[in-house]
Length: 253
Length: 258
Ligand SMILES: Nc1ncnc2c1ncn2[C@@H]1O[C@H](COP(=O)(O)OP(=O)(O)O)[C@@H](O)[C@H]1O
Ligand SMILES: [Mg+2]
Image (tube, rainbow over all chains, first blue to last red; front, side, top):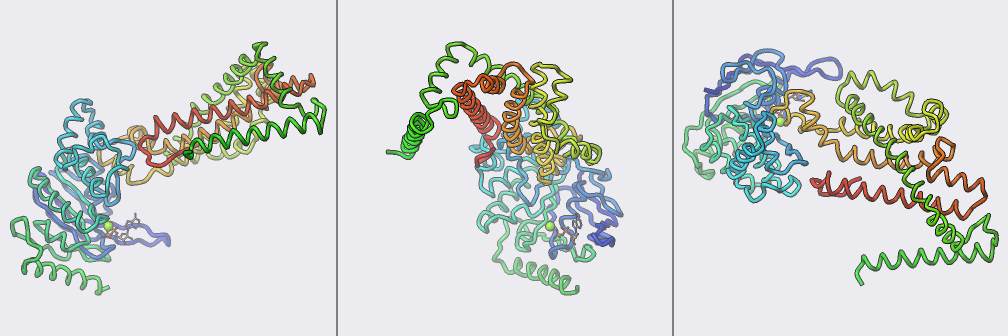
């Protein structure tokens, strides 16, 4: 069991002028084990902040995040993170990037390379195992970043607009690959995106956040089997609904 | 003819022209070896010094002074740079001390170098240390300051739970290019300090000492020999270091560094 329970979560950042920015307020969310959740909402509504609090990279001002029955107090390899910007260590080859978490846990060289190779194969980059990150395209780098997070065998995989910088074609392919990884590994995934299309294509449930302060506005379950047809009428209908919600919450400002 | 050979040939040609002009001016315009030794005077002096065997010995002594100073600067500069660049408390505590010491020209340490260490290898090494320490410290400091935040956070999320682990596995590798350029600058400064330290009598051996000693003896062709060897050795040290850094440490960088 590795669901995520978020209770009455709030986060305020101090501003230059001494006042506070209320980035999140009263956020309640229950994420089931093995659920694929997408967080969407207008820019600045606190998606990244929420994800970073779940990761333990940021501490909440109020409320709590419980993962697997334990309150989150700091970063932990049990909650893997794929960052928006390129976060591979440029001085490590692909295989040693993927093996990094295992190395920190003290796993021996042979064994950690074997595990790393397994995940590198899973993301289809076996022939690049000895390459340095600068030799890889943007899509390949994010695949390595995913493999690196998975190699720690986390309970929850947190992803912050991981495909945001990729071209449309690469992006579509990455979405397909992510779904097949998710089906293979059965991780709980919390995925932040600004693309509603991506959210409808990927998730079991779309959580729409409203800004200032960031709160959960709506939670939309998408029960359809995958792979989903982006051109179907029901797909367009849900996309329209979510977009309208985001628009309304933005213009309500 | 490819570009590489063209570059070589033209380089050699230009050196040859300078040597010829130098020879003509020295022999027919100036006419006094004391004021401007000619190319042939210098070549003769070089052959003599080479024969006497002191040239190699003095070069080795100078390299020893240089090595002592640089290794000491590295062993102190990198850890102190890490303390100041990574820990805010370290920065607040050490910064005032460093700011007071840094502007003191390294050669101003020569009197104390002699008083503390006598006319020893360590005294010369100390002056070189005084010159090489700050570039290494500063480069390490900025290297650690500028580690991209996302690397540090990735390290934390992947299981680095102590500062020591983050420094060793994330910050230090990220800072290596910066530290390497700092060392390169430090070597340049250190080499200059070496000559001055030896000239000012911190040592009774070495290229700088011999340069000054031959000036007293009015052996100007010898002085030119030592000048050229100082330049050449400095150049070779720099090249070796740069090649080493690029091949061994920075294979992961697409561009050129240092
Ligand atoms: N480290 C920070 N310091 C101050 N304010 C921040 C910080 N991080 C985020 N914020 C503020 O919190 C709000 C939410 O930001 P963020 O979570 O990045 O939104 P999103 O990812 O949805 O675009 C914004 O108003 C942003 O300016
Ligand atoms: Mg964001």
